Image 1 (cartoon, rainbow, N blue to C red):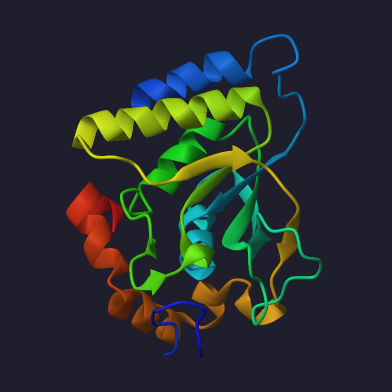
Image 2 (cartoon, helix red, strand yellow; image 1 turned 30 degrees about the vertical axis):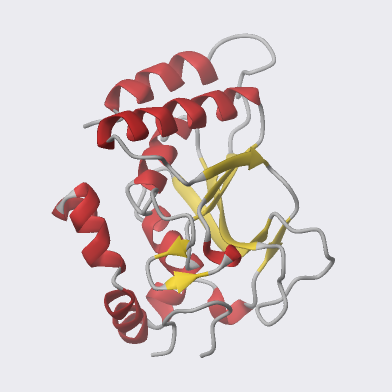
Length: 205
């Protein structure tokens, strides 16, 4: 399958932040989250892999691969200039916090690569956190700074306001479970697992 950009597609440190998020996101006022479910949008390169990562998080009820951050109507896989490959995560905030989602996101991207993610290069594959409100933005910025300080490197991941999200074509949805062999082949040959282990350790590869 042809990719936009260059790539293959064919074949404990945030624990304190979770406490902070509980205080921020469960407090009274406009930042409260009283709804039974919430959504969050993350771009981390190949949306197959990002969807796979969040599907393993307890409290996540749905993941949808798609396109975010662009302005042209009706983006498709073959034509999504200006968009990022992204995943919309629906979750139960009584079971998983936004901070824990951020933790999952960070541990499944190379936050130091400004050109894309792993073998997939180009604007569509750059890592982005799309925030829905000031509380999410503050928490995302806090965790970004902690990573920069921990590794003493500039973090390339952008944090921007949430925009329109368009679901990708059906054949992209749940690709990791529908096509496990080709998915694992892609992920390994893309170097994603290897690079994640190099950055975060074997538990996160």
